[in-house]
Each structure stands twice: as C-alpha cells, then as structure tokens.
Length: 481
Image 1: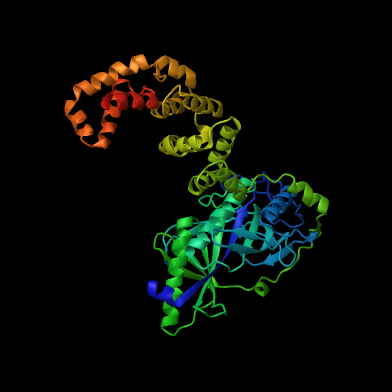
Image 2: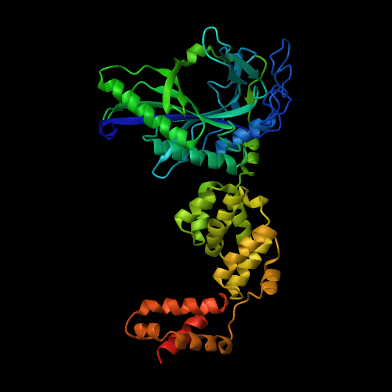
C-alpha cells in the first residue's frame, strides 16, 4: 500500500447525515425516539396516505440555522423543499422530501488540525425507514425482509463537504470535529451506533500531481470512526489496483462490510437528474428573516474550538484540553469546577486520572456518579490548603465516587489530615535514619537517589499524612549531620 501512496493521492468528500434532536418528526406529529417497538411511531403522513399534507416542524429549521452558523455558513433569506423521486420499500410515499438547489445553509467550513475543510451545503430532509433482513438466502430459501417505519420522517440535516480531505485520518478528524460541534450546540447526539449520525464517503484517487479528479465511488453503511478509516483505506487500494492493471474505476455506490473488511458494489451511482427533483408542491418556500437568524445566533453556546482555546489559556496542555473537550459531559463538569474556584490543572489531572478510570470501570458518565461538583471542589480545596496530601486525595476521591460522602467528613472520620507539626515528624525521621545505617552510608557516599527511600519509609510510617515539604526538610537536615 505504501507504494500506491507514493504514486496516488486520495480525494475524499463526506456526506454526513445528522438526526436532529427534536421531539417529533420533520413533517408529522409522531415521535422519533430510538428503540421503540417497530411501527409504533407512524401516522397517515408517514405512511404516505392519499390526501395528507406535510407540516414543517419549526424546531428543525431553528436547529438547521444554528448548525449553519456554527459551521460558518451563509443562511439565505429563502430556501425551499423539493421532491427527490426514488423507490425504496421503506419509503411509502415513493419520494423523499429534501432540498436541492435552494438549501437552508450554503458554504462554510470545519477546522481540522492542518486546514479548513470546506462545507458545500447543509440541507434539511426526512429519513427513510429501516429494513430488517432475516432468513436463509437462496432461490428457494426462506429469506425475507421486514420493514420498520419508525424512522421514516425523522428529521435529518445532511452536511456535504467539499472534496478537501486527502487521507483517512483527515476524514476521521473532520467527522469527529463535526460531531463535537453538533453535540455542543445540542442539535444531534452524534451516536453513530444508533444511526443518529451517519457518514457516506465519496473517494476517488488520482496520480500525484494531477489536477483532475478521478472517478469516485460512494461508500455507505459506515457507522464508526474505525470503520470510516478502514473503508477508505480499503477503497484506496481497490481503486489503485484497478488503475495499475489498466482498468477504469466505475462510478457507483458501494457498501462497507465491517466484518469482512471490504466494500462491495450496491448499485450504479445516481446523478441529480436521476432523482427527477422538482419543488415540493405541498410546502411553500421558507422565508428566513435576518431577525430570525440573529435570534438564533444569540443562543449559540461556546463551541469546541473556543473551549479548547480557553482551557489552554487557564494552564492546560493542548493534549489535556483536547481530551476534555472531546468528552462534552466531562468538559461541562470541568467548567463548573472552574466556576467553583478549583485549580484548572489539578482538577483536570483528577478528572482524567482517577475519575475517568472509575467511570470506565463502572460504565457510567460523570453526571451519573455520586461525585457532585460542590464536593469535588471541596476536596480540591482541602488539597490546595495542605490539609490533605495528593496521595490521600486520590484515595478519597474514589471513596466519594462510591459513597457520595462529604470530603471534609471523610477526612475527619478517617483522621487523614496532614501532619504539619515538626515535633511529631522529627522523631519518626530520626528513627528511620537510625534504623537504616547502610542506606545512610550509601546516601552520604553519593547515592542521592536513596533520599526517596527515606521519604517512602517516613510516609509509610505516617500513613501518607506527613507534610511533604516539612518531611523533606527534616530528612535533609538529619542525613546531612
């Protein structure tokens, strides 16, 4: 593959379908909650019954405008809906209401680490239902398909990128950053496994240095970041091998098989004219005033890039800041800790260390734990004041995660406050020095690292409660005698 990458360049564009977090569907009243019993969230509109009319869900428009603003897009003063004609057994009307030449969002970009990836457009549309295939395959077998129309009519925002990405890692970072933006502004939960965010990947290759794009293939059925990378890498090799053998890549839609690790042909790729778009006659064009746009802009929360910059400004490394920003629940919790006066670096160390390990083990989120922001801030304040040591704080935070008990009460009950009285520590130091003459001689002979041995013995004797600065001072004085 490395030989191919020395010769060919990938050209990647992505179509991301984000399911909007509305209570009801885009053109009908029924709900769109994931996991309901099949065909329990349907109506005459969803089923495409004669005489029914779609009614646009205003909240879908609000969310689309908010997304466009977050993606640096232009929100035109007018957009319209179109009928996209094609037959699928899970789309009872025989057409999809979508947007074609006048979408709700035009242009924009998403920042990745090394460049801006252009956004061509973002448009509203309804989702199709879901086919469940079962049974044995074969001409006389008992294979069959069941249709679940709960998802039909679910509101989608399709975000189409420019073909600006040149590697699978750039594609992965684009989708990750886009998902973070959508989650932070609250329009999509970004759950790839449940299908609330899906990516179709258009990939072509061309000889390095060539300006013209090659023939692209569209890869569907990609439902994880790992699958996205694997599918792109596989498709790159497949297309390179075709060209190396003197063949031509065919424009088509292909399915990704995650178990087999391959793409396979699904159908010839349709062009826009194949869908026979025409304006949706049952929906008037939508006029979007500048006042409406500015009202939505005023609700814009802090975006991931802004949060990342702020975290670094309060002392976090770029790596630590990224780890927190990429976990929205952890980032929002961290913000509350900062508001409570916690030291940023200390708080992030505990969150990414002991707290993250506990949450992973228990398979819960920070919001589901018993560690309240107030109690955590109290624990960090005890550490800052020197009432407890760092090691004691690490043990206490696990206790609090398990029980929710007050930090100060735990310190008092367990007698864990730091010993800062010289008269209490000095006898312990003198005893340790007296009991270890060989180590003392080696230390005085130049083995400075043995100082850690004496510190460890003293901490063991005091059960970790000795004031570290005072202990080090007394040990140094005693060993230098």
